[in-house]
Amino acid sequence: EIYLQGLLTEQVPELTTDLQALEDTARQALSPSAYGYVAGGAGGGATVRANREALDRRRVVPRMLRDVGTRDLSRTVLGTRMPAPVALAPVGVLSIVHPDGELAVARAAAKAGLPMVLSTASSYTLEEVAEASGEGSSRWFQLYWPKDREVTVSMLQRAEAAGYHTLVITLDTWLLGWRPTDLDRAYLPFLQRTGIANYLSDPAFLAGLDKPVEEDPLAAVAHWADMFADPTKTWQDLAFIREHWSGPIVLKGVLHADDARRARDEGMDGIVVSNHGGRQVDGAVAALDALPEVVDAVGGELAVLFDSGVRTGADVVKALALGADSVLIGRTYAYGLASGGEEGVTHVLRCLLAELDLTVALSGHRSPDELGPDLLAG
Ligand code: FNR
Image (cartoon, rainbow, N blue to C red; front, side, top):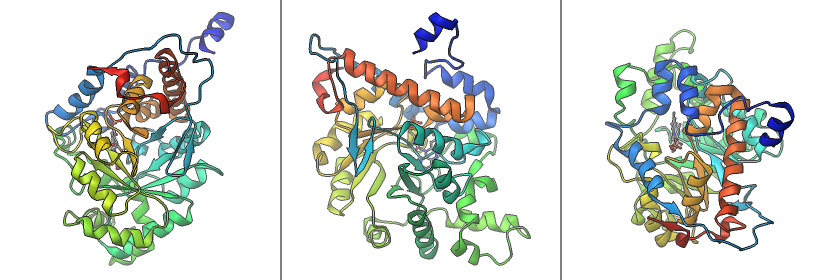
């Protein structure tokens, strides 16, 4: 399509089709603080680099002459039919990246038919984002599990009422990681009221305030900071969520095979093998290096999703080959949002899916189900 347009009209794409280079476009579009928030990692960035290094180290060994004329990339994961095993990871406070924030992302994801996992820390309320995503969209909700039980239940009920059917509980962020890029600027987007829209619109949260938010906004922020997460939670607490959520539950941030087994034993429906894009524990194992052991431990028994470091269609292929049922992208679409709003996200998704399809085909396969570890060297 792009080549044909070039031939007929000499038009070139507005944004680069090199999704790794899109980060530079985003850097130019964003303030240094906003860019630092998105791109930054924990500590010295060892895990951000390790995520990329682990993906780059694996090399695809293409197979020839296998009739790849007809291909089908679609897959059903946790009851969600996807045109390709790709979803949009929860990324908080997207209005600092673009004024349309999560609304733009929801529209682009719905247009592509891909699930979007909405962050608890979204800049627009979960109801507003649900409406933007439209009929028939696949809505997943990510929970930063609040300390207070009533607020938790209220948030879950709101999400179910707004049509979110799959819950993703993030396990690796009971405390924010040590992030020098944000610390040095004393910049924490979550703390801007824009990142706590779901709280400021929550009746159970508001009931805990002494004064209306307009009268004492700082007290509301302090109350949120106290509520945001509870590092004393244990595996036993999951039963409480199960009582209050009827759809599939996915645990995000699993890196150890024993934790994966425990998630299975607690009756969870899926896990995301993830180190939060290298933003939490500096020096944590690369998510891709953790994936094979987790797949060995629980693959086929519950859905194993993967994220951290994915930038291209070829990266998606590598994670699928190592046994991921589906792959989530984070910064990659945030850079598209920064570069061109909804159109920018659409551009990223189209490029990613097209490159994924090409890589599957050129490596001699017709569907994600045919990809296995023997596809990779390194
Ligand atoms: C995140 N991530 C994240 N995760 C989550 O569960 N809730 C959230 O609100 C956020 N917020 C967030 C903000 C920003 C700016 C980034 C970059 C990431 C983590 C995210 O879901 C995912 O795990 C990583 O982004 C995956 O790594 P890549 O694809 O960014 O390399």
